[in-house]
Image 1 (cartoon, helix red, strand yellow):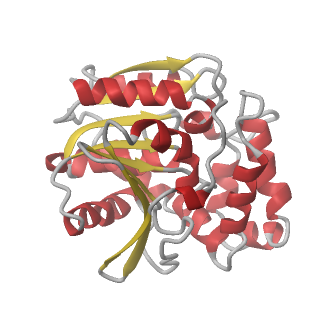
Image 2 (image 1 turned 45 degrees about the vertical axis):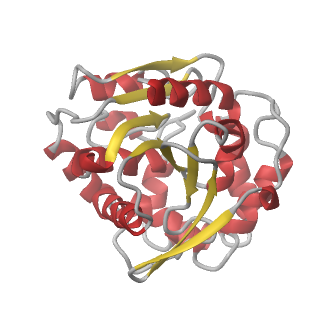
Image 3 (image 1 turned 30 degrees about the vertical axis):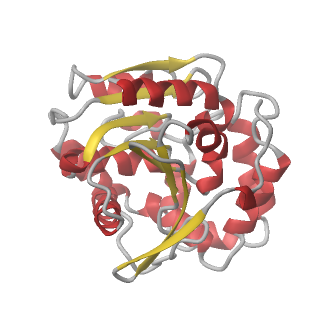
Length: 288
């Protein structure tokens, strides 16, 4: 695995967009690559990708609302179309006319919606290991022994997730990091400590749960756009030991032009388990 990079080694920037204050790491020059992380992570999930890509592109690792140093916006709309519109406004504020959008996990949910609603701001999209509610059979989310998607139900409940995880963030989030990663050493102590610090802040766990509480809006949006044909190139990859080929197949069923596959030997946390593969995929899309 690449050597860990301290957060201080990167250039940090904050941007006010309406009532939201966005935090991002911004490195390099050239075509803009916008990176969106998932739950329960922050921009730091992209540290290896930023470091390996900044000599060939301008890489912006943006924290969605509720992540890291970006506003919590606990009373806001956490549905993917709404969050995608916030990202659109962010790009306009930064004067980024066109970006290659890369999303993982919840970041991929948002990137999917963005690719449908704001294609004019894209040169392409890369989605990494996620399950899009509304495009995947509902039985895939049913709680059962050994299930890795039970949290979709738990997080969507009102109040109960906060009651049961308050003060136990290390144990709770640690379960995901240790259970869903397949590459030994990828989820480093420094990374886990960074994520715990972020999600121990008041309101941060609620913000994360709110993405799951928007399940019905997200399902309705995905189902309404089941036959959408993407205007810009889109590639979709799952980790071999996570969503595998299911992720790309769920989107190919909507648009046969979707490309993608599976990243061998990788679990769910693709940007940290296989940063080299992610850099290669991004570079290839930039060169097309």
